[in-house]
Image 1 (spheres, rainbow, N blue to C red):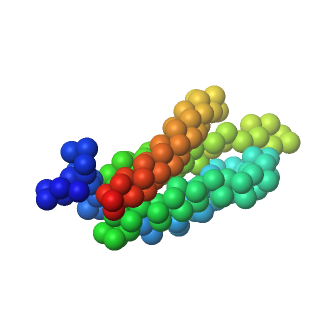
Image 2: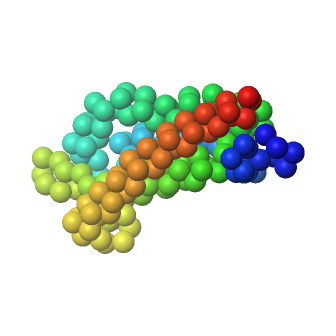
Length: 165
């Protein structure tokens, strides 16, 4: 690492100033946001149906997958020493968390009596189909955000190992 705080490739360390809250939030939100998508959305006006039951079945694998990026960030020595995270990990987490929040507000559900309204549909009167499309877009963004957060955590860990040499 050079005197200017740059790596051997001329890239800045890119530790986020606002990353301190992420060091705690990524553990809490890894549990809270999937729980919100599955059953917590009922607290904000969504009608719960079979999706809540299906979500409970997938709760453990989802929880484990959501905890992988925070675990990988523990291997980023530079960010851990600064008690922060890197910018690219922070950006990926923001995408992931925003997408999961939108997914929880728009998730389409059905019961034995037919379609049930999402929270956003109840608040705004959006049709079921529009809420469904928004949910699929949000889930695609969440999956992409999760993949990028995992890649960002891994690259940060590898970069800190190079910086240590």
